[in-house]
Image 1 (cartoon, rainbow, N blue to C red):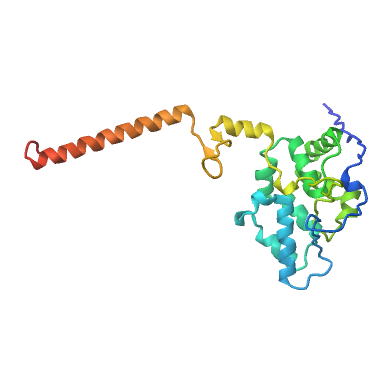
Image 2: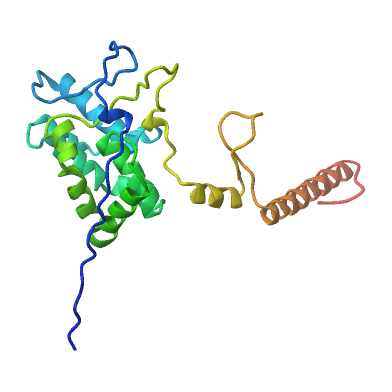
Length: 250
């Protein structure tokens, strides 16, 4: 029996007139992105700055953890064995990125996240999200990352030696620009709903950070254990007191 496999053709989409596609004339300031280039790396300090910028761009500030570092990859970059583009590719296909970003999101949310972090812009439309989702579903994470890094847009703006960055977040005639992609939550709304169903309470304001509220059944078990423990300790203390007076013998 012969099975003919038909490849799904990628959807085409038109770029819209987003802010990053319009030439800017604003005076550079603190809100302008700082570019990290490896055209000339004088010492390990320069290399370390590029590595940290790559981590921050791909993993975002929420995942800037020592446990997420890939030391052998950093060593390869410091030794000049790989380019910035290859460093970015390795971070995107790493086990840590897969587990903490790809596996906890649906394909649509993951595509939006990667376009922001790699191309430095928001997606043009839902059609672009669907187009890249088809690539992700048919080629897997490795093929999706390769195609995204080989786009003309990425090669023109980042190339081999520049860490991707959020392009032109300044909005003319507005007091504030676009929000930083680095502050965008890595989870979609459906995952947030799952966390809330497990008892996580993200709306409390009386304690710092998030507060985990255990489910009702688990709270009942804990309450029963606490009551049993307190009863046992009370009886034990009473027995000790009575033994002092010789009324009972332990």
